Length: 67
Image (cartoon, rainbow, N blue to C red; front, top):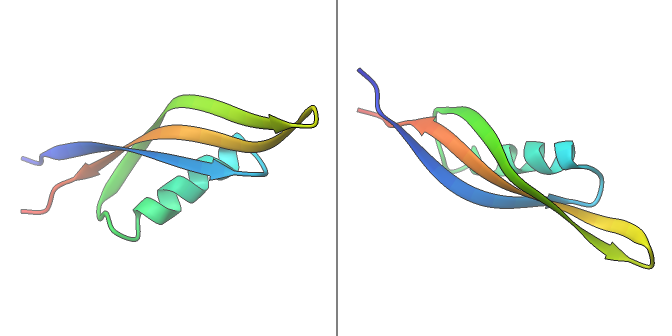
């Protein structure tokens, strides 16, 4: 039997929502092992001069705990 845990992080990218999600998972995987899924809980953007300058995503990262 396995037990999973969920942790929440915020990741950002100047390029796209998808890039922010990928960057968040990439960074989380440096310190969290056994990541099995990610849920994009929220998406926001910052705007300057009428243009989107940064995408921010709140992510829930699911990972299986080691025995």
